[in-house]
Length: 276
Image 1 (cartoon, rainbow, N blue to C red):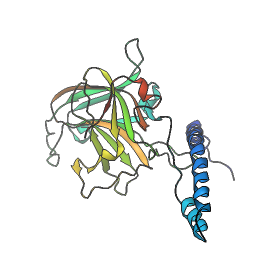
Image 2 (image 1 turned 135 degrees about the vertical axis):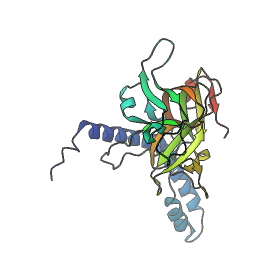
Image 3 (image 1 turned 90 degrees about the horizontal axis):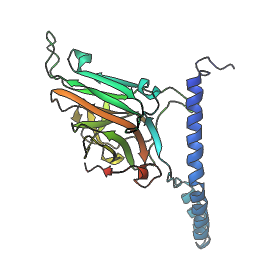
Image 4 (image 1 turned 120 degrees about the vertical axis):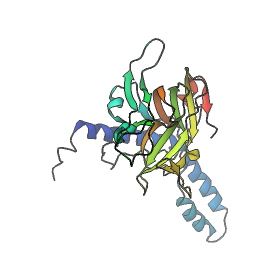
């Protein structure tokens, strides 16, 4: 069997290697935990009478290992200009509206890190001759669907992490963080307000994954269902306050973390937890 040219492309091989490295590093960090757990199971099993030992071992083995990551899991890093081309912008202009949106790479300076600049202007006028369009005044961006790897479709498994972290500098407008998963309903979005507490300054914002709210076309879906955190497709930010005028949000990094004490988040001054 010969590999297809598509599978031999550099992007495919690079993504596969990156995923392999991540899985290898992840496994190395929790191996000691698994060994300790196995020893504990054996000591408990020995103390059980009759068939209790065998039943306990079988039951314990079926449980998933304890996986506590010790390093952050990078999702989007805008220090690399190529990350911009791996993202897409959206606005009401796609349906005939007049809002303007751009996502530009800004190189590192002495005062600021390299980052993506999400900016433009919101207009709420309805397009003429399009009576089916009843609402305008929004803009957003997200990463594009990523290519396949030897492990299958490229999806982020952030199930072992507690927070989504974003390093941002906001203008104070009402932005929302949007997360899309491999949901049965492809138009579902999990959303959470991006609460920037110091507009005009760089800050790290932490949002608990379980506090995201499932929505569809901007409306909250009932009943709510938990986010499919093992299969995250896209992450992005949207502006939906429908306030006419310019907007400007800087984003340097987006990553998953178990808390503000991890090796990277701890270095950032002014870490803020979201209060939804």
